[in-house]
Amino acid sequence: GESVGLHLPTLSVQEGDNSIINCAYSNSASDYFIWYKQESGKGPQFIIDIRSNMDKRQGQRVTVLLNKTVKHLSLQIAATQPGDSAVYFCAESHQAGTALIFGKGTTLSVSS
Amino acid sequence: ETGVTQSPTHLIKTRGQQVTLRCSSQSGHNTVSWYQQALGQGPQFIFQYYREEENGRGNFPPRFSGLQFPNYSSELNVNALELDDSALYLCASSLEAGAEAFFGQGTRLTVV
Image (cartoon, rainbow over all chains, first blue to last red; front, side):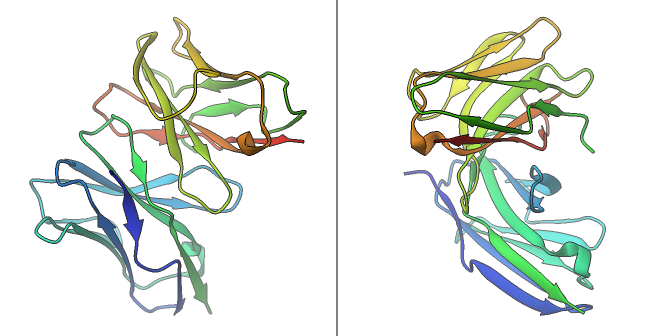
């Protein structure tokens, strides 16, 4: 069935390190992928998105990589800060704005 | 802040009761989606409304129903509540069905 999963449930890094959060997806027909950050007691916050016709997209301190051959998505956070501590979800959909399929999430902990 | 507001923030209901959750979409957004997020899991798509019509539905029973009003605000109704309905209910709005979705802070529903 359709599902999006993450490789690791938790990731612990030191402040200033670069973080890489990975995600595998199973639906090769998915056209749109998004990374969300969710802090305790809050709704998911959009970080960055990428469409299937691209393999890399950069934002402020974040980069998303898409490998359609192995159906793998990753989020790279440069110079990780304590404020980056949260649960990170990848999500996929057939097109932007349609139903999102979320994975279980990776909890990122950043220590000073 | 995304401009998407949900009410109430917390709610406790008894098994068998009915509940109505409300969502005000970001100004100008005509598409609203509802998600259920169980503790420790990623959000699961319930349904989407576009210009007052249902525009897709996830794998949820008919006792989960919704409504979108002319001002594009939305309601989620759940009848015959079960203990497993305890979750964070998230609303997301977007400008069109094909655009980026912004999430509200959610309503925490506890069924006892």
